[in-house]
Image (cartoon, rainbow, N blue to C red):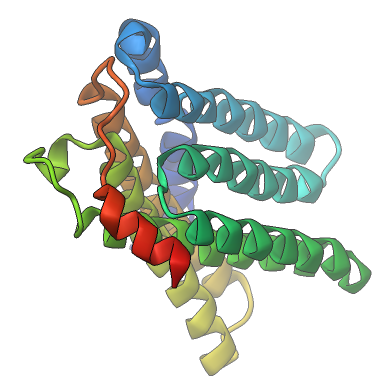
Length: 234
């Protein structure tokens, strides 16, 4: 397979990845009445993702520059999942810490505009991965203190967190390869697109599972009251 054929194949994969958001969107339409409040907020992601994917593609075609839409998606994803995790994280100190981290991360993204839009896209994606990996780890750690007998694979936010960790790991690994090897040019751009597409497909898979396994009731508290008191007081 020539590089041109591989590049064309990756382009098709990017298209498949962008259209893959339609799968969780259909599940949202079919099962929205079964969602708990946090999952209802999470369901807005399918519309945000579809809007920015379509806008970025049209902007690339007609304006030859879709960088602002890429930044906008990264920021919007962070803000939406902040709202989701604030509804499910029980420790007040953890919620405050993540709120501070979010404000700091958005400040870094804003400051990165002085470096130019291409660098700002990279910064916004790294900030997104770092913040959302932090949210996911906080929720997974909270699940270790769970007092009910619910299985983790039936918890929508647990599934979301696993998908986000995989996405963040793949994204940061891709940037690490670029920095360490100073690997530039069209070959790296194709490899980067391949990595991001596969990571996004994995995230959309876990997102779909989250919507499929969501239940209508508000999930029970995942941390016992005495454990939460100790966390807040410490």
